[in-house]
Image (cartoon, rainbow, N blue to C red; front, side, top):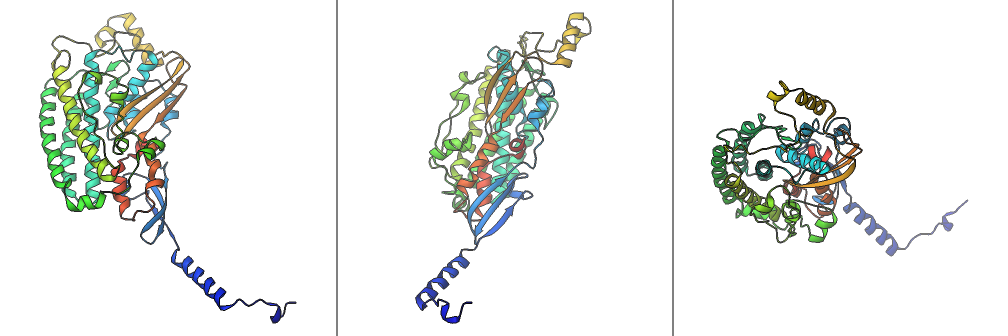
Length: 423
């Protein structure tokens, strides 16, 4: 049994050192804070587990999957055409662009992606660029509103409503368009659509300038986001970023220029890049991208074969009855056309065995589709590379060292959408 004499009594210096160590531990106590999944600044059901030292973030872990619907597995149980409406629900802020990306992937598997009629190519490019403007307008409006600039949100939403009107005239739907088809489009441009589009392009240019006047040199806006969450070139590449988040770090990489598809090689446009890779650069890149999209659509309206009214009857679908549905009047009068219609609807487009990957420059970044086919009308496997999912992987890198109030600005600058992230 130990006696008092057996117990070692530390000297005063050791006691002081131990007390100081305990005090430092107390000062460094951290709190775990759940931001989301129901939080207005997370722009969807994103949960971020924050480790806080006072107001300072020391660690951040994104927790995704709250909106998971199993799209990739669903694709294995339906025909290629039946999956088109599901692509609307990926980046639901840019359904027209998703439709184009998916159709091009299947057409690459079929070997016809470079054989599409020119008129179809120009219309698809206009759809993709309208989707880019729409997505960036909402991203900018929500970003500004989160930091207190409500007027900008009202401006951008006014312009998005006009894009919905254009989508409704074009496809019959405002939000979930399902406009593209394998081998072409569901329908041609309606009468008066080109004039309606030109009018919108003039008006949106004015509103982009107005929003920039309110923000770009606004001292509060600049102080909140400049030099915040800097992403270096090396980190942007290492984390697989794409789209404006990659170009905001100064890397001039755009799939429309690096790996041209459709008619982009015949169009003139600039690729804006940032200088430092902070939130302010990402904002400026998106502002300029909207202007470049306006420029691209103007060129498409001027160059489109057949003109806006298509008096020369330029085709919008590939000339292959085993890929594209026959005209309805022929289905009702020809046995061969009826058989083609029946086979395409029930069994789907007969794709050859093989594996392909196609990447499309979507508003959020590179939307990619990997398709593994064993032949027939349904894919054996499908993998969707969603840019929002990849872009969110940078959160643990850039959040530590920032203040809690900075999280709203950083998330707004990353501009993600959870429907695409979770799939």
